[in-house]
Length: 449
Image 1: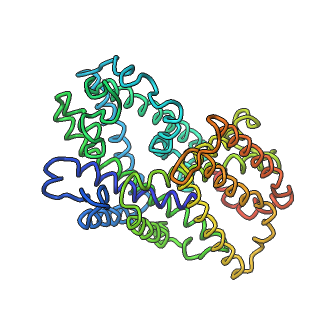
Image 2: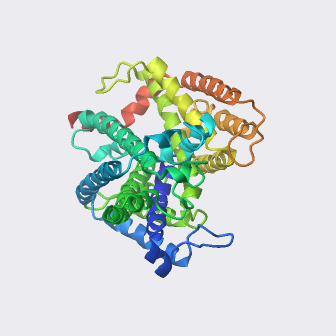
Image 3: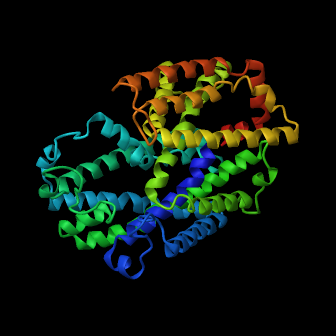
């Protein structure tokens, strides 16, 4: 699931670049890249697909240049990605800020808590991603023991503060007349036609800022896309180290770049643009896949606390008995809010992945079958998520059979039952020690770093 969500992100960032740039008037008229009418309205046209593939090739080329070039170029992009939103917040807030907007169009939370829950999987959770790269690329860090936890917590704090400021200033910068009777068209036009901040910058008279935001709409998503190609490649590399998967994925060139893994990630990213040609079509899938990925983390950590708790480590989660099950419940709620249609499709994708893994295990004659008992909770977990999604209220195909708030209670109770069952099925201390010993050279390297 980590690889799946990572390989999807470059494609969605390409779509973000094209969608935002295409909202500029002269681009829309002279080089339109998105279909405007018919069943394919809002999707990439032939020109858009060509531009998307060119961008994917560019992302791939940067990754093939080596880890140092990727790191150095990413520093510049990160500085830009932080500076431009801060600039936008300061300029728009200084030119126009209407406190009354926070009570207009139905007041605070006009669609209730369920509107908030639906919005989480419609872009909010996706927007806050990116901090996990500190872990996934930690093998190339100088001092991962010291820096990984700092990088994660700092990135999450910066993202939370920055996005909150952007949202507050955006609401305050809207024209009161556009939201007086509702939030269907807060920009005065169809929100899907124009970039929100681009439109607001023009409305408050900051045309120069609108131009900067268009440039940023290319640089920022492109920077994210480049990093996620690297992430997908490193995850492919990690999979290649397992005997059940092709070992060619774990080979590197003289620069230390896993070339085949990078190419596979880029190829799959291009193929994703076929069935998912719009940003909205991909965001809910990526969010749900990410939530599934995150859900395994608290289970794994709780299991390690149980069977390997005495190992020295640089970072310790505070109040693990409370935070770990709470984190698992949060991930399950995000999966549920993503909707039934997304959940059952991802469950099928996971089934296919497990089948491929089983084939690899049989061909390589590994001992993976011995861990089937330890993984017995995964099938009922996904099956239960699909069932709850079907009787719940979110997504196409849901039956809305569970009463209001009862559905959330059902998800939480189900998640807690799965969590404690999964931890109880953890490896024995002896088998866990053997598994850790297999990667002892990597752990020792991290400790020396």
